[in-house]
Length: 82
Image 1 (tube, rainbow, N blue to C red):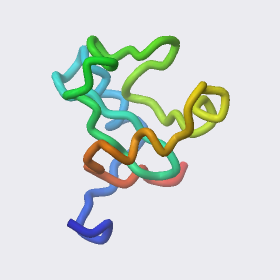
Image 2 (image 1 turned 180 degrees about the horizontal axis):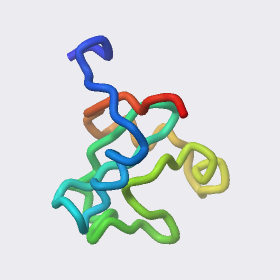
Image 3 (image 1 turned 90 degrees about the vertical axis):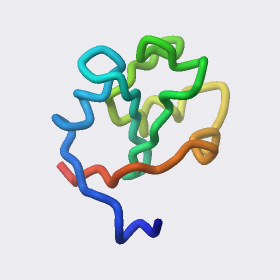
Image 4 (image 1 turned 120 degrees about the vertical axis):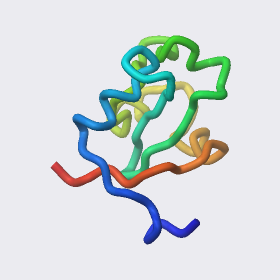
């Protein structure tokens, strides 16, 4: 699936995929939305001090790893510009 085939979602729609409101656990970074549901590190929608259903672009600059770690997960949407 190319990025042209992906749906565009709002921050409000992303927020619903926090592992609580819906079973899917999604996070956004650099304009892409990743499905991290299968990751044991994102159980219950939380990974250390990071919460699912949010754009983590700024937060990942302070993480002990790079945002490239998200590349192993499936991209499910494009985050609409604010």
